[in-house]
Length: 596
Image (cartoon, rainbow, N blue to C red; front, side):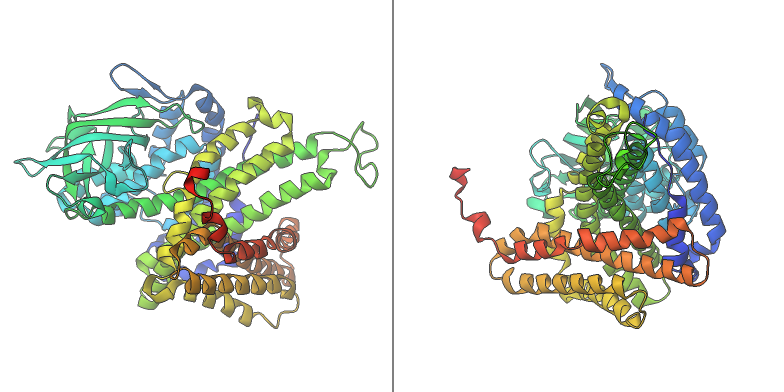
């Protein structure tokens, strides 16, 4: 049976030693979150994930969700009770606006604890995760009446939320949507159409589900310019806040899918459902992108969380499973065989996973702290810089974390061999669950195109120039540190390759857009490797500082070995990415479509 231990100590080390938690003390939300409070919150979240959610993960996968003839969906046994406890514990509204019942704590804290919830039970984590995203879109773009009616119970998680974009004939190209909205005399709209792949679209864990739906108002312009965003509740809400009649939105079916069986992925049929406009007419994508960007960061964390839980179980198995002898002589001569952790190739897989996980967690924490800066910094320059950083790094961490997270789940499965392929170990579920993260909230190929086509040139390249500047400044500030030098040189080399790749795109992408498209995947992963190497250098600096003060320990010292492994065995892939993207689009586009 699989197990999970939340990496609370590692998260706290990143906050205290790597990112200097005290420097964020000028942000209002941090006044209520001194480091001792943060530690208490993360510790309790870790315990909830380990003791309540993780035991439901495999059973939830095996049982799945079930739909009755009326379209009502039941979640797996234990999910409803766990969600009730999650809501009562205040976890959904941790970073929510206190005006609507939230606790008003920093956003980074919600992101950090979400890793633990995701790793323990991804299917469960999606219900509150989508609710937070829907609430954020409503908080920013909804009018006061809608916010008063829906935000209090969405913020606390008493009501859940969804995002309704995809239709049978369109996914990424939302300009093709057919769902229509017809004006009603009372100022509402009647929504008619079908939405598919709606995560948490129908379930029994909350008394109401608030759907955010994109549709086209009659007479609106074609394409994305004519898309509006609407709020359509499962149950209409009376003036006194009580629930009224069932709205005309019904779950037509739930998808039979590869993974995340404990989450109800629904087909929702709208038949004149009553709905209200969120934001401006024909500006729905602008409002929906608030939720989509939050979701993309959340999916990035899913890649990390699944990679972490897969690693923990693979490492435990490798230390226990006896098979063969070490190439350099028996390490356990009193036993019939050595544990497989002695074999170099097993170590390679485990180290590749762990070296990614620890750097990815650092990058996640940095981006999450940047979100708080972007929201609340009193310094306009710092606020803009943080917002630029998030915009630039969002497609990178969504694409890289989930590509690598899935690959790492497969590696962890490989460590277990045949035992990883059967259900009992839980590894095959991690692989199945991780696969969707590369697809939903914008397939990773789309993330790469967004990076090279929109994020790099945005504001004249201000964000990417600032990122290069931050890394370069770190290298310059620490160039005299002899102990840190072995960790800086690889970062400098990777940064140079990333800058070279960026220049190649500037020179060749405009000349032939196919060059940009052909380069996008490799560029995204080159950027990701560089950012992870930067994180390892910052981690190494923090560990060396601890050692100099005599305050290190074995767990922290091991990070230096992991950093060296990453730089020696994983970072060289940056050269391959540069070579591939620099070859251009010719070989990719040469074969005519008919020849495929």
